[in-house]
Length: 371
Image (cartoon, rainbow, N blue to C red; front, side, top):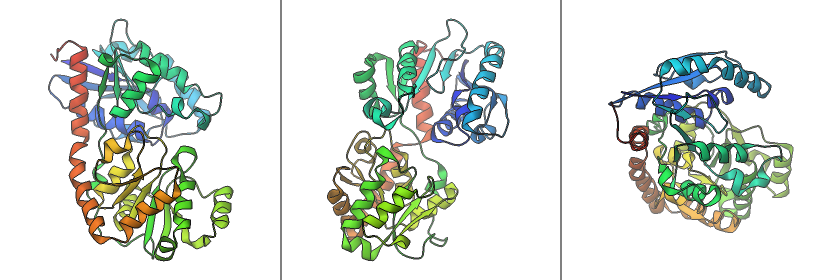
């Protein structure tokens, strides 16, 4: 029996978030696969997913999150983790982010790389950000590097000079909340709408999506532009809306649970994802699972993820974005084709498959041993 221990890092950084969700989904499934058991050692943390994760764990959720508390969590875990880590007798330590953390001597380590955005778009981050440095050190000392797409793997090999034999690709899965979405609940907005989801700054290219919407009189007349999640619309975003000649009431922001997001997808006429870079791209899969046709960028990992199940565009060209949205919104046949293709595409991405692929990568690193 091989024991895989997941360390504390992401659970001290995120109360909620995609990376911590990934590790909870992965660990719970690895723990159920033959020849492996999983454990999480996060002595003090703030993560809500971990509190409900069906896997043996050592740690206490203090229920508090604030950026100023992160150093306290990290320092506490560095002091408290070595004893439980040794007691777990791990066969593998899977580090959940890029900083160094304790592992018993001679135990092989694994790290997952989610994207290379810090290296590809460095101007998106402050000069004091040390993620690139930590990532390079982490992949260099790891015995195995998992990448969540072939695009990310190619970037890791190219930018960090990691040899191909050290890398395995393990695609992400999708929450069942979105696969269970139905149209029975009321729409979250009274008028037909286009949908943008998540953070809007920098490479997420919210500005490009708004410019595309504004330049198409057909889109403006028929649809509002709904934003789900992220922070409240900032002053500069409101100024952009005004400068583009859009009515303030036509651009609305909503927040809510995953269930409410699933309904927002389900009732949207189209989902637009104009990101200039992604390591994978979960929101297009969420839209597909909810029966919402997708228009997205043709860069980085997105063509690999969406395949033929989306209208694609150059994210730097608002005219292309507008044209892609018009092809979806005003052609019912094309909408149906994309929805059907999206449902078919989902079969390639599941947390169960992610866990199976990850365990196979562990086995390969361990020389095929599983008991």
